[in-house]
Image (cartoon, rainbow, N blue to C red; front, top):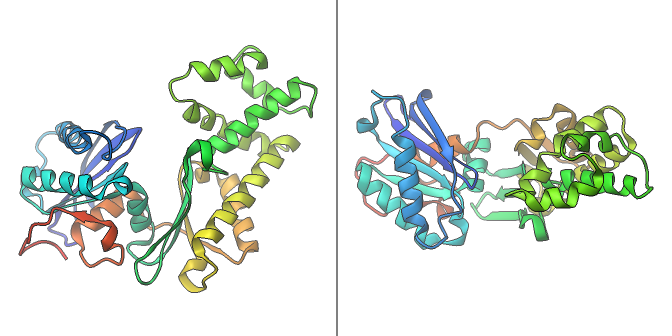
Length: 318
C-alpha cells in the first residue's frame, strides 16, 4: 500500500459491520454496528450497500473520505453468489468514484493473515474452517459447513459438548466443574434445553460457553480436558484435509478467531498440529487487512475469488 493511499476497508459479517479508513498503515478512523445475513440473499447487494454507507456515516467527522483511492469489502455470503458480489462492487465504485473489490470474509482473513502468500489459515470462532490457497491460487477448503453438518472443534462445538457434559453429569455421569459454570446460565441443568430454545442465536449462545470449558480444562477438570483435546484433534484433521498432503507452504498454518485467542487452547492446538508436521505461523493481519490489500493490489494469486467493479481504472492501485 502506498503511503498516499486512502483506503476504505470493510468487514461486513453476519454479526458485525466494521469499517476503517486507512492512509497507508495509519488508521484514520473506525466505526462498527450490526451485521446482516449475507450478500447472496434477496436484495442482498442493496442491503449491504446501505449498511456500509450507514456505517461510513458513523466515522468521526473531518476524515478525508473524499480522497479515497480504493475500497475493499469482506462480505458474508460472497461465496454463494459471484453475480451479486460484483453488483455490490459496482454500486460501491459508482458511489465513491474509486475501484472497489468485494471478497468473502474467509478469503479476506487468509489474505490478511498471509499478506497474499499461498498457505493455510484456520479460523476458529463460533464456526471452524480451514482455507488454503495453493501456488496457483486455487482455493482448498475443509469444514465450515455450519452447525448442523460441520464446524467441528469450533467454539459452538466446544460449548455444546460442555453443556452436554453438564446434562450427562446431572443424569449420573462423570461429575464436572462445568455444572457450576452452567449455573451462570440457569438455576438447574434441567432448564438448559428451554434456555437454549429461547435465545435468538443458539449457536452463538453455545459458543459463549466455550471459554468456560477452556477455563475448566486449564484448571484440571477431566471432562473439560477430554472435550478440549478432542477439539484439537479434530481441528488438526481439518487443517490436514485443507493441506491435501502437499509439502511446503501447505505445512504452515496461521490461526485466527476468538477461540485461539486463548493462550491455553492455542498452545494445545499448536502441539497437536506439530505432531502432524504442521507449523503454526503468526498471522500478519486480519480480515480488514485482507480487504485493504485487495483494494490496493491487483494480480494477487487469490484474484479469481475477488470480485471487482469491472471498470478499467487507469490509475487503479496495483
